[in-house]
Image 1 (cartoon, rainbow, N blue to C red):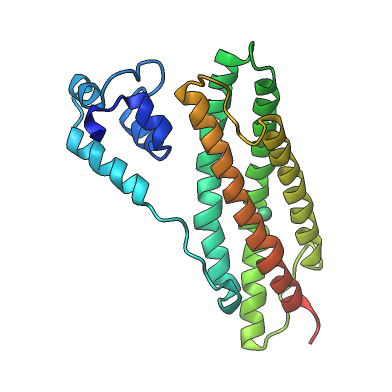
Image 2 (cartoon, rainbow, N blue to C red; image 1 turned 60 degrees about the horizontal axis):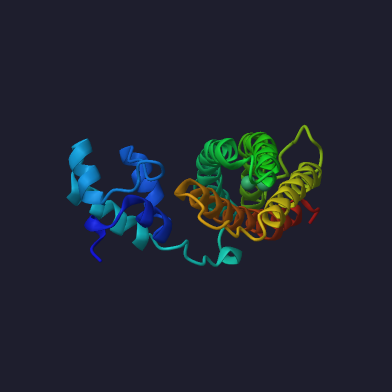
Length: 238
Ligand SMILES: [Fe+2]
Ligand SMILES: [Fe+2]
């Protein structure tokens, strides 16, 4: 069936990437979603061609390529983490906040686990937002300066926190808290298994949670397993 004549809610379910496109156009894919896409575009005076084009692009958006990080500099890795992990984490946490509230508000009476999911999403956000700020403002610039000093044969730069191992231990402990909260979400939702007849917003919440978990796992892996050990090695006495 052509995309234009499919119902918006069906597109939101079949093609999860479409949800972001619909959000960007203010297209209601939930309660008002039982209409063909072309009709919705017509009613809201939105260009159908433009929406179809964005839907195709959203679906084609390739997953992040596998980078040989071990051969790249810490400064490249830091830039990658900030742009490819931290930026989407902030965007997705804002979406998850709204989605978890909306789904709990509508379906919480029949699905009590949704209150816990909402609280866990809040816990992840409360942990991650200051965590990323600390990395970007303190730890990452220090790691970059350590690398520069090492390359220039200069002494290690001064740090108010003493050894770089101290903030790294704190960051890794915070990663564990977030990982635990995400694991609890997965458990509570039975591996993001949707209940019978779940509405598109429910679908969007679970898809976003699953994507967020993937993103966070990749993010934490790059820090715990690639960046941090290299920073500790750079800080070791020659
Ligand atoms: Fe990070
Ligand atoms: Fe981190």
